[in-house]
Structures are given as C-alpha cells and as structure tokens.
Image 1 (cartoon, helix red, strand yellow):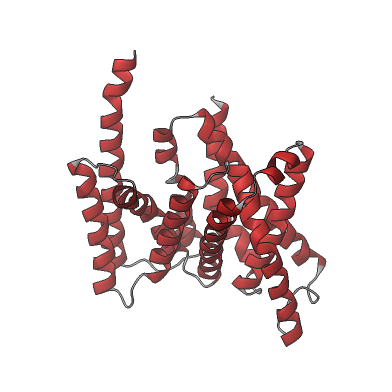
Image 2 (cartoon, one colour):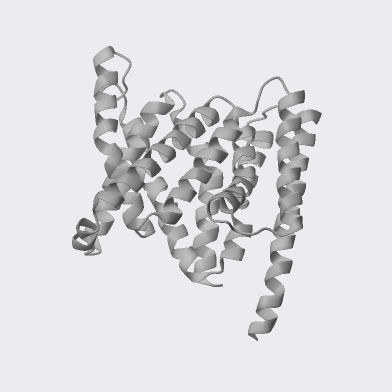
Amino acid sequence: MNSGLLYALFAYTIWGLFPLYWRLLQAIPATQITAHRIIWSCVVLTLFIVSTRQWRDFRGSVNRRVLLSYSIAAILISINWIVYIWAVNTNHIVETSLGYFINPLISVFFGTVFFKERLRPLHWLSLACAATGVIYLTLHYDRVPWIALVLASTFALYGLVKKIAPLRSLFGLTFETAVLVLPAIAYLIFCEHIGNGTLLHSDLRTYALLFIGGIITAGPLLMFATAAQRIPLTLIGILQYIAPTLQFLLGIFFYREPFNSVQLTGFGLVWIALAIFVLESLRRKQPQRVAGN
C-alpha cells in the first residue's frame, strides 16, 4: 500500500477518534485544555525541527508577512480547538461531526469568492443541498447548530489563510503555536491566580494526558502534510470524511447522544450534498487521467 495513503488513513483515523481522548480530560475547562495543547504542541514541533536540523531554515523564514498571516491562523485554530473540545466534553459530538462534514463545502464556497474558482452546476447543487440541510436544522431544531457552523467556518477560514501563507506545513504550524505560547502560559497562570486552575492541582495522570495532547495534535498534522505530498488531492478529499464519520458513530453508538428524525433529515441533506460533490469531482477528474495515459 502507498505510504502516503497510510499516513492519510492514520491521520484521519486519529482525528476521528479524538473525542475518546478529550473525554479523559472532561473535568478540565476546554480553554485550559487548549492552552496546554498549544504549549505542548509547540514544544513537540520545535523539538522535531531541531532534531531534523531545520532550525536555521525555520528561524530565517520569519518576517512581517509571516507574523501577520500566522497570527490570524493561530487565532482561528485556537477558536476551533476551544469550541471542539468544549462540544466533545458537553455531549455534542454529533454536532461536531456535522461541522466537519460541511467544512469542505464551505471551503469550496470560499474558493469561488476569494480565488474566483469556477464550479460546475452539480457543485452548486451540492452547496445548495448542504445549505438546505443546515437551514432545516435551524428551523426545526431547538436552536441554531452554532457549534457545527463555528467549527466549519473557522476551519475553512483557517484553510483560506494557510493557502496564501508563505511557509510549508511544519514551519507554519510551529509558528502558529509559537505565537500563542506566551498568551497560553499567561492564561494558565491567571487561572491559578483566581483559584480555578488545574496546572498545580492535578495528578500525574492528568499531566501526562495534557502533555500527550501535544503529541496527538502535532502527529496527525505531520502525517497529513506528508500524505499531501504523496497522494492526489482528490483522494485526500475523499479520505477527509473518515474523521467526521468516526466522530458521528462515536456520538451515536458509544456515547448514546440523541439523534432524532429532524437531525436525520438535516444530516441526510448534508450527506447527499457530499455524495454529489465527491461523485462530480471524481467524474471531472476521470477524463484527465485518461488523457494523461
């Protein structure tokens, strides 16, 4: 099997199983878990850069444009992480999966708006179908599916910023976490000062889980970056649905979150939209492969 495919499968499977891990830290506020995640991810990524003798290249890549681009990216991904961890630990795993199901479609929409990318009619039908699903959930459910919308929009905006950012994946992610390290440390100290911190009031198991959170954040991202260089983007586009599918299954069958007919209809419309989008993308790609042979 292609090594790139294996890296992609591992990355998306780990992302899909993330709820199992963050639930182990359910007693800790999502903001504090995210602060630890930022700090330890930065440590892991920096050690990786140093151990692979890339530190000089990394340090030389920093300039004003890099600072601006990755500061915006850092803010977006931190919001995404906080909302995701909070949602997982407050029994909204199913809704988080909805966010990551519709995220690719929002990214496609951003591509048409900001990069003037042209879509085929069936792609527009796919976007309309997904929007109908979200509107249906909003009108017939007890609240706007804001968790899904925040996760999808922040990650799509994050992808937009990363598309025009100048650094490659490893350097970019390291710089993003580095930008947030001092604010994260300051926040944890503040939490200790007001008496609701966990930094100095946890057991060894909790400390270990918080540290490993950095590894499982950096690891899949590095795997994904490697996979993106070795397999077609079309295949990556299909594989990305592994993660929200696993999250959805965990929410329904493992954590027994409620899933009623209204949700089924709304999710069903989104799934139909994804099916249309993937099939049309594959159909459009097929003549290119034939011509290339």
